[in-house]
Length: 470
Image 1: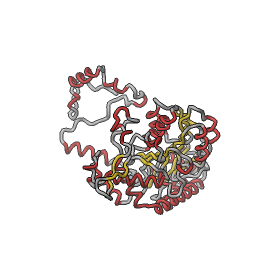
Image 2 (image 1 turned 180 degrees about the vertical axis):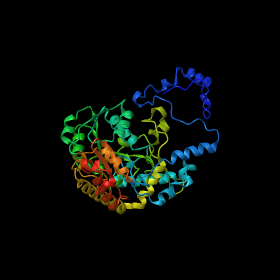
Image 3 (image 1 turned 30 degrees about the vertical axis):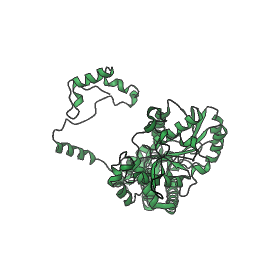
Image 4 (image 1 turned 120 degrees about the vertical axis):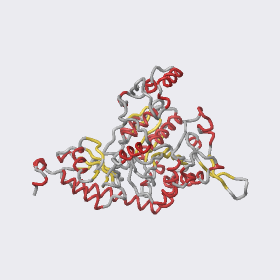
C-alpha cells in the first residue's frame, strides 16, 4: 500500500480529503493506512499506486474509458478454448438465465418469508436436487465459492474432532490451497502427502495418520482432472484413526461416477459453477457442503438451510430455515462461523439446470465428458514428443508433458494463440493442463492436435520462415 500525497483529494471519494483521513486515523489510533494491511504479506502488495487515468469530469468520458478497457477482453466464446483450471465452459440452457433474471430472484438479497416470492422454495428445490445427485441428505445454501465451502468443511472436521492436522492427499489447485490455508490456518495445519500416478497414495496417507488428524482431504477430480479411485480405502483409514474423510469435488460427473458419499465420505464439498453458471471472465461461483442427516454434522454447518414448514392452513406447507439457531444470524459472534452474503442466486441457477437435465441428462453428459476427455488424451498423446502426465482416469481435464518436443509449454501456448487457440493452462515448464467439455467437439480436438503437431516441429524447421517452408 502506498500512501497518496498529503494534498491529494480524490474527486469520487469524499473521505480522501487529508484532514478527514487524519481524523479517521486518529480515531482508531493508527499512524497510517498501511497499519490496516499488516496481515497482508509484502509479496502480495502492489507496492505502487494503481495505474489509473486522471479523474474524468464528465460521465460520458468515464463511460467511454471503461468501454475501451472492456473492449480489450477476449472471451472463450470468441476463441477455440481448452481452458479450465477451476472455471469451466459448459452449456448453459437459455431458461436458466431467464429464471434467475426474474426480479424476485435477482434482487431478493436477504428477504424474509413475507417478502420472499418463492426464493426459499427455489433454494429448497436446489438443495433437494443436489442431495439426490450427491447421494447425501443435507446440502447447504451456497457459500461464496467452492474454496470457502472446502475451508468450512475442514473447519467442521476440526470442530467435530477437536484436532488440528489435515492430510491433503490429492493435487489441489494452488489458488484453492492458498485460500483454504488462509481460512483455517489459525485452527488447522494442512500437511501435503505426495500423490502417486496422479491420485492418492493410500499407504503414504495411512502412515501419517495419528490421533491429531482431523481429516483426510481428497480432491476428485483433482487439480489435473484425475478421478480418485481409492476413496473407500481412504475412508477406512481415516475412520480407523478417528478422522473424517472430506471430499472436494465437482458435481458435473455424478450422473455416471459413484458419489463420494457412497464410498465413505463424511463431508462432500465443492463448487457449482459447472451446473448452469457461465465461465465469463472468471466465472460465477457458489460453494456447496453436503452431509448425512446426522445432528452432529448438521449442527456444524454455519450456513443457512431451508426446509418444509407447516402453516396455519391444513394441507399447506411453507419453506423456512432449518436449525436457524446454529447460524451467526441468530448467535452473532457465538456462531460457528460468520455467514453474510451468500451466492444464493447461483444456487437457484444450479437448481434450474439440474431440474432441466434430470438423471438421464446428467448421465448422458457424464458419459460424453469421459469420452471426449479420453479422445483428447489419445489425440494429443499421438503428437510426436507429447505424452500424458499420468495414467489415471480423467474427467474433463488432463495434463500433457511436452518435454519431448524441444519447446516449453509457454512457447507452445504462445504459438497456438497465434492460431486463435487457447490450448490450456501452463502448470509446469513442460506441462500443459488441457480441458474439454461437451462444448468441445471432435473437430475442435482434432484441430488442437494438428496445430500442436505443427508447433512441435524440429528445431531446424522452426528456424525457417513460414513462407519459405514446403
